[in-house]
Image (cartoon, rainbow, N blue to C red; front, side, top):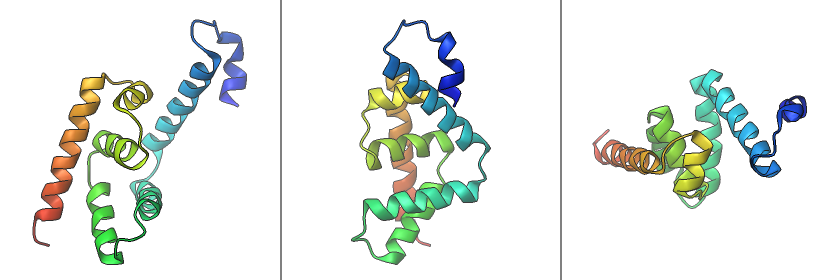
Length: 121
C-alpha cells in the first residue's frame, strides 16, 4: 500500500525493484521500532528454532535469551547475517549503514553473545 501511494514519487534514478525493496525495508524497520520487546523475542524465537532444530530445548532457550538481550542494531545485524545469510553489503543497504559499521556491529554482537553464553548462569 505504501509503494502504491508513493508511486508518483518514483523518479527512476534506481531500479524499480530496488525502490520497492527499500520501501519494504523501511516499513519493516519502522514496525520493529514500535513493537514491544516481547513481540520481538517471539519472532526471534521462531527464527532461531527454525535455524537449528537439532539443538536441545535448554540450549536453544539460552541462545534465544542471549540474542534477545543484544542491543537492537547488533541483534538485527547478527540475525540478518548469521541466520538469514545476508551479505554485509545487503545489510548495510537495508539498515542504512556503512559496510564497515555493519561488520563492527556483527563483531560486537558475536563478542557479547559469546560472553553471555560462556558466563555461568
